[in-house]
Length: 230
Image (cartoon, rainbow, N blue to C red):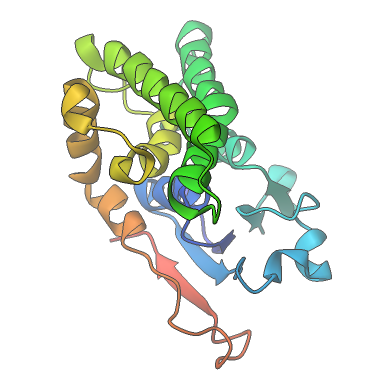
């Protein structure tokens, strides 16, 4: 399936936002990127809450949704599955293969994301350094890296073939030094990371930066079109 009207991605350059920009770049479909400055509270504006009631990025609007009618949605996992279904790529249709993708996608959403986020907070940013919290989350982070390392020992990608599960993980798994991880302890994760960032679409998506200032530009200027057909 091809996309004619651009999909609008409500975005900030975080691991969750990067999941969807990677998918759209891999699909090669046109999309518009609308920055939601989470440091300035854009996520609480009524127009964004109408699309993402949990006040979190990412969210999308697709003018060519089911039955040709527009659709909007929030939650990165739901968006990845929707796009995979719509375009028939990176998301297997066979039940057994799809179940494996679901397992590792849910593993990222329920484990890697929340734990790595807490580790990053207590290890790097918390004003008060709490040894118990740091030890707890750094230890659990390393356990998750071990799980991933063992999974990747015998395969190039987490679900076998490259899929939305890999896209969901890469933004979180990189930057390991920020959460007290020695990547040399996890050579299969490092090799997977290098395979991932060598993909042109992943490289393009991870390179997207927020404008230097969103305070000085109009709402229209803050939205730019990125054409995935490159």
